[in-house]
Image (cartoon, rainbow, N blue to C red; front, top):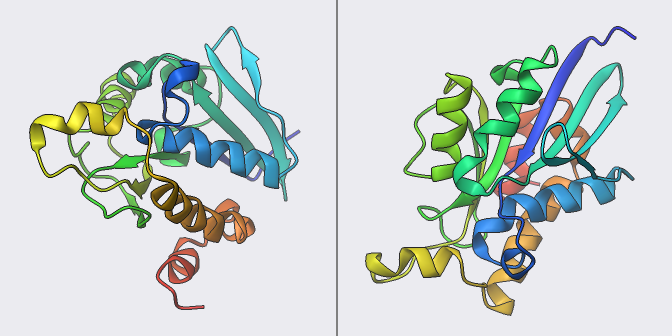
Length: 194
């Protein structure tokens, strides 16, 4: 089947069971919510060392992927999937945690640097491109910069998690805008312009 367009959604996180509820795994949380909304099942792919779901939406091929290679090596499965498909980095949306956004704040932008995020560093290095969409999910930051690692690998409070999930659901509830690249309209919802 010929598709009019392609879209690859990448959720960044760590596969260890004891890390699934941590702040560094909000990219995984988002993909889980998205796949549930779309009635899709993420299945393990040995080829890509990832959980993957492929489906079509209005003549568009969609792939959801959760790399299981740990955050710092997220780029390796993405390099493989791009090399075995007609996707390019420009067709990709990477969902990840952002220390520089207050907890629960979500921002969408195209291109730019990694902001020091090791998952993005890996994807940029392996794909050789910075030209992809980023859905940044705010997790806030600790008062002490030296506590950054235990902070991102720690679990948010119940209130913090509620704020994050509520923001994610604003996108999930308007999922067609996300799938159809109507990003300006989508961000209006995120910014409270309903």
